Image (cartoon, rainbow, N blue to C red; front, top):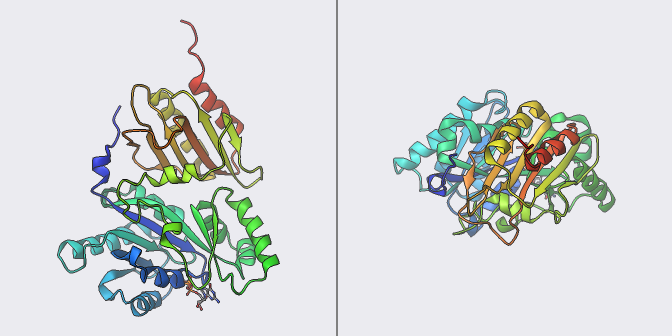
Length: 349
Ligand SMILES: Nc1nc2c(ncn2[C@@H]2O[C@H](COP(=O)(O)OP(=O)(O)OP(=O)(O)O)[C@@H](O)[C@H]2O)c(=O)[nH]1
């Protein structure tokens, strides 16, 4: 059994993805955020869909970050021609940082184009050997246009994919939208992503402490983001719990008082990931390991997992193993059965 120690993680810088449909307010939010003292030391990688990288200049001009702090990835959609482009952009930023041409930034924000599905970008950050060595994906934020999102969600699968994958949804232009329309949009968002909190904002005004996990902002001793995320869930009382029962996106929480055998758990989760394919959107959990004082943090985007990290101790008072699966069109009963089988008494020899 081998887990990645926290020490390995310390060599990585925190990264977050700020996605959202075209015109939904990503750049406005980015500019407002970068002016806040708590965001000092943030480098930004921006991907544009189109000929002229306008956003780069907007961010530089308005936030005063200067040309060296942003890197625009090559034209075209990041999700189509992904790893080379993202890897190249990130490595350029790191090379300039190492050469002293850039301040020693403390974290990286990736802003994909408004048409990009964030899943391949998240997967590249988790799986690409070069990127995952220098970066640790902490959060996926997605802006949602309070005025136009209902139409965009109905017409564009990219918009639905963005919402379904988010850790937090940022509802922009709340100053322009009618309350009744906003309420209907919130219902729609809860159907598409039952576990993401929806944070309303106007003109990008937001508290970084509300948007990002403490560890992304560099708070010493902050728990891994997945712990904050699990803590924010409604209390998990039963061994299984659905957070939504729709044909589309749904969340399944699996809980156990006793730890599973790690190897059996790992094998089962591998099967779930392979069989679930793209219908498995997110996996997040804390899994106890027999004989170990702390749990293993498990999290992933679709079939790609972060390297598992063992914590020295259980955060908070809850020492139950907990796994939350966010699925799209995947039947939950085999998942529940598979989880239960991990804790069934072994058959007598
Ligand atoms: N009234 C109002 N306007 C907003 C708000 N947020 C963004 N806007 C405006 O909406 C337009 C689009 O915002 P951007 O921040 O450029 O959106 P974006 O997501 O970066 O757009 P793309 O890069 O094209 O995908 C701009 O004209 C913004 O000024 C808001 O909360 N209230």
